[in-house]
Length: 514
Image (cartoon, rainbow, N blue to C red; front, side, top):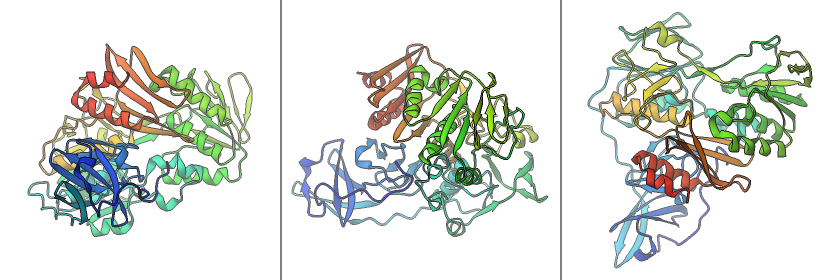
């Protein structure tokens, strides 16, 4: 599943020639083609809608996705599109899909040419300007959606590097199977054409909440009508002798990924410290590059605290089948130019070390402004902080979760993007609480793991299908209720679980286990 891909291959009937209405399943989809492009039909009652069949995120097959109300959702990473406008209304997709003119004649469906997108009307409300602090997933999504919502006032986005497809930094790009030109979320021309001022190479170092102004690392100061804090998270650093050595790397930015790739070119053996998602994805990518890889971590199993023992054992076996060696239940005590030393005194040879031992939310700016902090920046259901006109989105935001009744903070790419989009809508007066179901995916060699919901703890895990066969759904229960679902190669069920969580439909979730 690469970061880019072509359109879906043409299959099914020629929809321009027409098909019988009865051939389109009620409430379902049918994939065909028209004008040399893949098209998916959706029938709802007496109405048939036609849209492009290729997701604009990673080219996923929308015909294998799920229709929810007036939306179609991609089975790969849950991007969501409006069936009537084609608009990308739910991340991770940012670009729309095409919509087609459909004629119903004498019991037949005929697809004509593409519909022209309807122009968006200018937003009638909103602050006189918006400053976005952070150019990652949340910040970029907020800036883009503000413009798509018709907001015409100045937008400034401040970030040390421009917006890139960060999930790919530890996956295909690091593995050497995706070129760097796939990584920027947008080119510089996009921001110019949409009048978004993108300021890179500087950091915001202080925030005055009353004035809504920020002081930058170059000594300048900017003031805005509203501010979106999207400062993300920072890697936890090793606190052992040699932990800051030149051969030790962390992975958060494009520059970090480039540095690891450069080091890997002259390395034979790598040690990955930490059994986090990042650490394990790095391990898989370095194995793809042909390096010998050892993984060191304090837990008994990789990913056990997030996905449980069964999935942890599955992930370990998957990596071991690809030649990764694990050293679990221990932390390294020292690093030198040629090795990583374990508590037993054993030394693991290492030309390259990558530490993935977690991240911390970047809270210094919010703390400098006196915003309410509780292991993150506390927001209301609209993602507004304790200071009016200042919002938080992404890894730093802690918001009230309507499903669990708890205040939660989630460090996932899609959540960050959807929060940025929610903030944009609220800045132009839509007053929509953030209620998106958390979703993330992780890729290990050719095996994707999708996860929907949020289970900080659980008292029982149920598995439908077989982990060993790479075909299963894993349900995480708390107090008898299903709080989260992980899937391996059951993409449609992952979408169904997301929709059920949105409705708080526990019977529908239970049905997925049968």
